[in-house]
Amino acid sequence: MSEVFDPSQFSNEPLPDIGEWEDWQEDVPTPLEAGTYDAIISEQRDVKQLSNGYLQATLDFRAIGGLHDGRSVATFVRVTNQPKPFGNKASQMTDILRGAGLDGAAPQSNADYVRLLKLVADQQMRIGTRMEWRAFCTPCFDAKAAELTGATAGDAARAALKLNKAHDKEARAAGTKATNMKKFLELSGGRPTYSCAECGGEVQARAEIRNFFKAS
Image 1 (cartoon, helix red, strand yellow):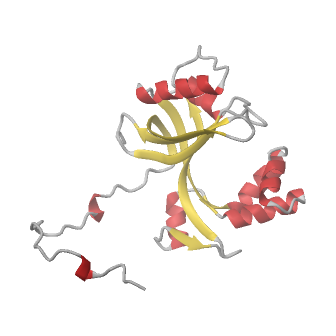
Image 2 (cartoon, rainbow, N blue to C red):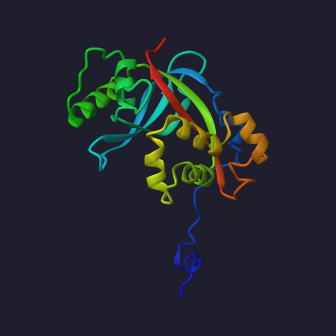
Image 3 (cartoon, rainbow, N blue to C red):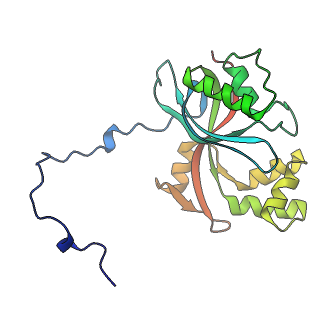
């Protein structure tokens, strides 16, 4: 078997001198605290139609204005135009459009939603966001979901949870190990992930946007 890192396959010509090496870690901003931030869609990563006919878009959000201008609020945020099963039944995409000030927008199709989301992103329209950190253990969540619903398959259990607000809340509580970055760092010893003490699964913290509303 050939060696991938075989120096004989590469040139011995000297490379340009780049000078002294500098440690960049001091320049890395600490994560934002959980809270509310005016933000814009900084990147449109993906949009696709799901098997149920609704859309799912993956977006990044960046703070705009104030002390945190330009800082990342959350990345790889998945939003859909599927109505919520309880509470405020407006979809996440509808919340984004209303938050951006498009009160008169009445999208009737997936194409309408894509066009309007693109407008919000391209014109950097401000949206109010509520971000929170969550350290989540999916195996613990799935185990509790199966216990509550009686469904053995993860997807079936998750679908059943959507029909019962109390069960959904209980399962999410079982999977949630920390709700802020400081607590996560205490639990993980400063590492990006750690093993769950209850099930051994991987616990990882990520910033999530819980609500969209009108910018301040």
